Amino acid sequence: MNSPDTQSHLSDSINLKGLDRKIWWHIIPFVVLLYIISILDRVNIGYAALTMNADLGIDPYLFGIVSGVFFLSYVLFEIPSNQILARTGARIWLCRIMVSWGIIAILMAFVRTPLELGALRFLLGAAEAGFAPGLILYLSFWFRKEQIAKALAVFFLAIPLAMVIAAPLSTFILSHVWSGITGWRWLFFIEGLPAIILGCAILLVLPDKPEKASWLTGKEREWLTGRMEGDRVSKETPKKIPFSTIAKVPGLALLCISAFLVGLFLTGLLFWIPQIINRSGLSHSLSDTGYLVMVPYIFSVMAMYAWSQRSDRLGERRLHIAIPFIAAALFLMLLAIPSGPILMFIFISAAIIACYCAYAPFFALTVESFTPGLRASGIALVNTVASIGSFFGPVLFGLAGGNMGGILTTLLFPALGVCLICCAVLIRKK
Image (tube, rainbow, N blue to C red):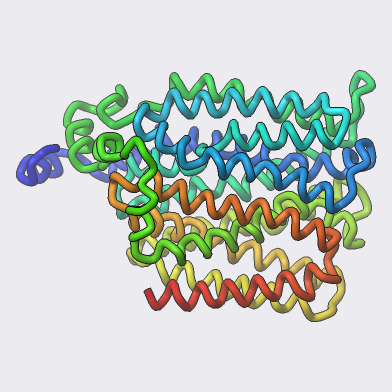
């Protein structure tokens, strides 16, 4: 690592704003595209369910289990996967992840029974394990503390962006039968191919670390190598998972609980919102459903980006997490009040938008909470707990019947709101 004097000299001779722009345009667009493909292949089962469930004889409870089982295997392999990435480099491991999950996603087009579908969903989770926390870790190798929340915000924009893309694309595919093959089978096949293609492209596009980036000048590589912590993460990440050391990190339990709640709510809706809207009376066709699903996610993209920029500009994380949590909680509680489908759609959309606003500041705080040697395991652990919530979300929504009204809005959403308020208060106090 360069001495402070050397770093100061290099800083004087480098256009830092120009360097930031160069890193941004070489890294962020491609990483966002990768994550969009990941979300598409993860949630397209929610759109397929509109016609697939009847073909395979899947009821709401069984659909909740089949869609959520993805996260069981994801949880099992997530931390080991991130440790391997930290030690071996991002390019090879991310390529392996994408190609393997793309193959499994395509195989889902050929299932004949719910058991086969569930088995492939389990394998899909195992193949994709570590992808999101691996990309978060990778971004921390490139972006300074003053830039990381903005980078993470744009990265996480991939989730609502994927839903904006998935809604019209998936409903269009579902509405057509080509070569006598039903739309939901084409959906899995068509949306699985990009993962294989882009997975191979990773080897050409993403350098592991700044010193391997051919598009940087020698001085820029030297300055970034001395300033960033990618080498420390690689060298200091232990071969065994240091659970006892991670457990001593201040605020870890609160990070994990918050991640669990957000995972439960947002991921549960990723899988269920097409069916919820389809049954609400607001939609009269598959196309209507697709357009309505787009609404909360379009606004989430805009709000998420603006809120994360504010967090970066002020250098503040906790309040930028607490305020969206409280806003989301209030809208979830309002859902317990009997109202028409339009008002309920507005409340649930507002809760989704608020939760996404907390995403980037939350993971920026997570990155900042761990030392370089613990960062790979720590980020993966928090994301693993979020994935556990992501398993229970679809299952609980399935048990509640997947409808607005009844148990879902009178008990589950208000209880979730109370928990989010508690987390917001504790995060702010910390």
